[in-house]
Length: 232
Picture (cartoon, rainbow, N blue to C red):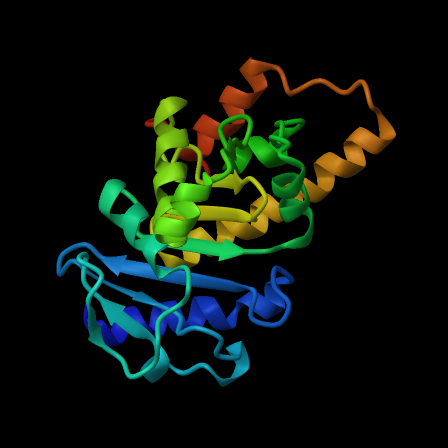
């Protein structure tokens, strides 16, 4: 992949955020990485999505040094960087403050899997990541946000592609994917699942999670070694 290709992909994914319904103002960012070169791209901080061009996208290395770009990268850059360094299987990260998924994050409530829509994208309950300590916030807030996310997935023995979403307590969701667009798609799916879960619970406060055999069937037919959803 050329740097031009990477910048175009990341620009396109960021420009798609408003139409996806996931963001207001500039409350969100998408990044993507080229694992061959070890270079990755992220939205510049505070730039309006409609005005964003590929030339605005900031390129960094895995040490966090800016390689190309005249604008300051997203304020969440260190979080994305830590995720790329710790999870070599991911190729994209999306962070938004989408309404319903952020409500779960602020409430410190895990997102249970109530149905097959959720199971198609997330293999079970979407976990909550612990709050940062005062020391972590003071030392390097964005870096330690990434540290806490990695810590939580490893505690649960979850792959970030098996569970490509987390809910950061007091903050908002982060999603991961095979590339920038895939991580954005997982953010869209997460928001829809959060909204459906709230409506489901309102209709039936006694609702229980989906049975494990249905969860397994729906998730693995799309993501397992014998996956058969879609085209070859």
